[in-house]
Image 1 (cartoon, chains in turn purple, orange):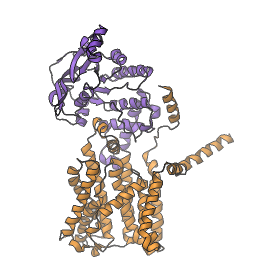
Image 2 (cartoon, one colour):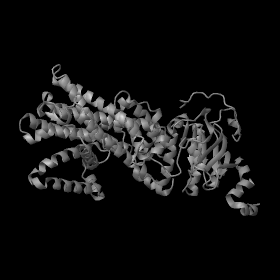
Image 3 (cartoon, chains in turn blue, green):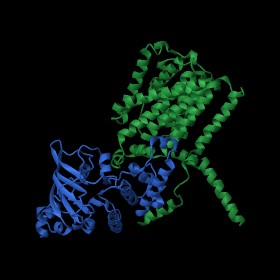
Image 4 (cartoon, each protein chain N blue to C red):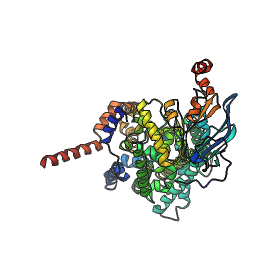
Length: 284
Length: 351
């Protein structure tokens, strides 16, 4: 699992919102004053956050607050204009999206992005791309260790699929899966890359309450089984308040609050951001 | 799991994961190619083949290799390349020049495979050189750049002295007839098809198809897009170059002007007709499209018109869902499944 070498010493925690059990470990994600401008528009500004080694963190905010932009910054889909990102103690500056993934960051997408013409198990095996030891020569001739590499990949892929209850659908075309299964498959594919931190972009979108409950259970299970951190963007407050240990609230690209679910629930700035000034008064 | 999902899972459960080794999945294609070649080699070597047929065999084999290798770029990677004839022509001229230079030194059995290797490698280098800048582009833009590169290659070769200029390269010294070339053609077709089918079911093939299906998702699962795009370009150029060498040996004179964009588009038509990403389809379409113009010869004046109309009809059929359903019902795989089911039932009845 651990291709990533031990981390050099970094000063931490910078802006603590990590759970106590993770205080001794190197934070899996640390950003300092991250910002990006699109032309004259500042989409994200002064975004500093620390995520602990096994933390479940939430990123919330009204529509257009810049949450998905933050994810795109963390995975280097966008290059930040300002600030720095440390993944497990290593700077991701100047790296490509694929290289950042190898540092240990994996993600799912708000609008599902599966390899829809490929089978379910092949989707997962694409996720295991960097851990499958198979040379181009082996691929062209199906010898030189091809069989062994494929066998290992198949077994591991089925194991991961089984974890989220998708093993029965392994040979189906991923584009033909029902919506909920597609969302789960995206999570499995991300997990297959052996991440240190999993970024979930609106995992509960379009799900009914019972499916959301199941998703919460799954997210906790993933954290406990793989010992990784999870950061999620979500509008469903029952999910966010239910499983997140630390929550970060964005509005107009800036962090307006950070803290535990209880802190956030009673924070007047957050209520104002969601409901407006008059709404906030009524609430109080 | 929701109710709908459960139903879906139940229907999919019947279709268990296929863990058979890949070889047997590709067996049908290999058997098909072997059967076709068995038949034609019998005809050719027993002297029963018409002159017309035996003249076409090498060119059919060349088109099969070109189509299967272009299918890697168009079908698997999902990028449009219109410069395939250019790569073929680079391989052809470099390989044939090598073959002419060494004509006195080695027998054909050694010279031709070496020439193919040389032609393939030179074409692969050109694939790399053109791919490096061109693969930054996508879709229509890449198509136009590859088209232009093909034309540049054609014009440069036409104006070089070493390749015989506009008169063409005199390959009379290395010319061989169909009977001598056929075994080499068969082996090259087998190597190409098996390599392509193998690639499709490997880590590399999956990465390539992932790039085709969703570039952003592929990148964020740790796949180096540039590396794989270049690999695809290089492999496909290699096989096109090797096929070119074979083609060059079947003529007494080759002109670079033959390998223009018309030929590239002809190869693309084969790929689209045979179905994107389908090796077997490419082979069938290549044979069909090479045989058709010859078979239509008796319509003389209306030959090209009939060819075009037939092409349109086949494309329409290919795109129609009803035809696809019909094809699926009468496919060999389905027939075998049906026979097995009947047999199993018989056994059950017996007991």
